[in-house]
Length: 374
Image (cartoon, rainbow, N blue to C red; front, top):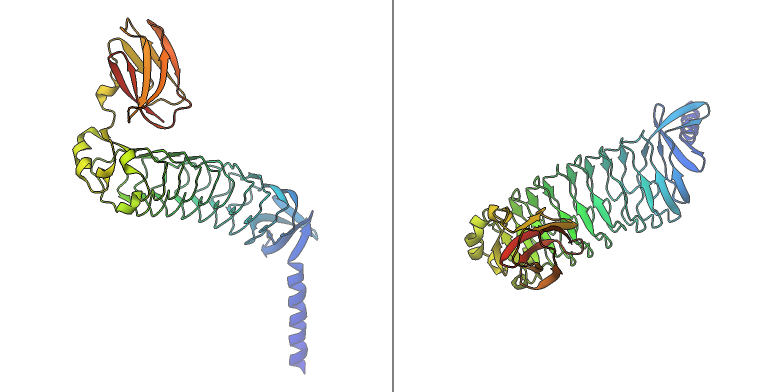
């Protein structure tokens, strides 16, 4: 009998203790985790702008808010914005998964990791600033989101598989200089992606990393890359120019460029590697295959000076007693892109902002300069 009473008292005490562990302040649910720390608990019906405080007080005890529970705001379709406190160092699994009206997120410099599917399916989230404290972005942290551009800061060492897969509005990507690998399907099916900056730190591009990026027209592979996995550019039907700085052609499977019209896609390689690429399996299918800019391409010519090179939004072309004042810009297939009259013995500004990334020929009279648009 005594044992039954003792067991009943333990159950009542446990129930009271568990009840005391959870409380709500200003519409946000919290759970005490350890000591004077709490995590933001499940809040699946939260609406409007969420400002998570750094600390909260309940029953005379002040707690530090230092984490999210797994899926804390999952499918909160009424959630519109989030401000995260500096007391947190991680955005947990599934925290904002499926928050389709979430359009603004402020992440503090205390956060070091963005975990699995944290913002997956946030279709109204068009931009986000990842702070320079973040070192890890897990899979698929931003998949199926509304991001239009992303800059991954240099503090980020690892971006896991499919982190940005199916981001249908993503157009521009700048990768971290601390990353060594572009993981499996990282940007797969980002159909509007047109610009990717791959840093010299990258050694491997893994399976399907850019598969089905059908708007990607030009991409540059740095000399640091030592491996290219299967299906990396599978379905990149818009690819018309590939710049590859790798000195010795890598052995790759034909599926790397499956559904790419290689016969209408130029391949720009180091000058000393030109003949090697022309006979290398898979690489030999590109047309034309040409050498990249050599030191001769950058020299100041007698009557025509063009700078900078590579060019971004505009080039300056200076004529000095030139025998011609007509500029013709064509792509590497010989198609005329731009025609412009210049002023002799003067500096002329050429707007290149509308030119897609790639390699172009700038011709003035007999002077031809090969120019990279980055």
